[in-house]
Image 1: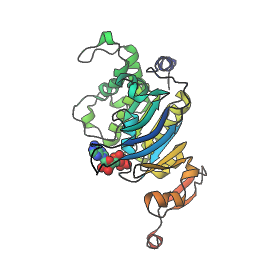
Image 2: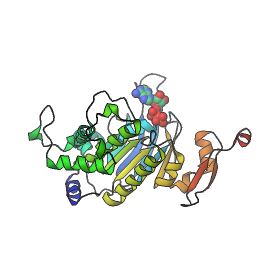
Image 3: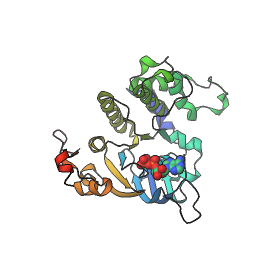
Image 4: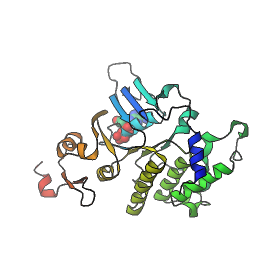
Length: 298
Ligand code: ADP
């Protein structure tokens, strides 16, 4: 699927970071809030987050609503900056990297959001090439793209199974088709790190599985590092190499799915009792909500 040409282009991109660094991300003592840090009622959204993301792993971030998952992803994407603490991207301080250097290394797929402009699918995916454009070819409209950009866009559309939608305006797509378009745009960026916020929320079962399979293939073939925020504990358990659990802005557990998907940890983080047994195929933890009779006892 990924052509030699694509691999070649990938090897050249580094965005100024050292791709041999021990960690894709290294966060130490990160505190973050949206408003002012002055005054008595500062609302910290992330508190003392220390976390490493290893190159070539799929890390899942799970936790209840409002626990800070999206905010953490925004810090990793450099869309927001922590008030205290450090974040390095492949050994380089994220604060010291330009937006463009960051975008050559990191692609971010936000949660499904309203699409204002009726760009076609192909145009939208091509926009993912923007950080790689040559400055000399800069113009205010399209016209900066070259053959390599078009190839990368076509390849990403094929990977995400949206080539047949290339000429359709994104405003006319279903939620799932639009989501796949946004992931294709991120892949066209040829990133080293892919950050995804609830990527499967609007997808039917088959496309959920397809996306998980694509992410694992990209991890194996390109050593892509993937950080994925998900509500779906079973998806995190089956498809992530490691899982970080957030509660009230703190990382309360991080480890392999077998280490962190325990009845005790999930009760502590979510405040409810769940049943856990080995998945019949993978043997990894399978999480089930209790039936109504059991629930009333907990
Ligand atoms: P999660 O993704 O786990 O649901 P978020 O990171 O979206 O959590 O939100 C964590 C907290 O930060 C919530 O209390 C939320 O209300 C608050 N928050 C999120 N975005 C903003 C924002 N743009 N401005 C102010 N507060 C925000």
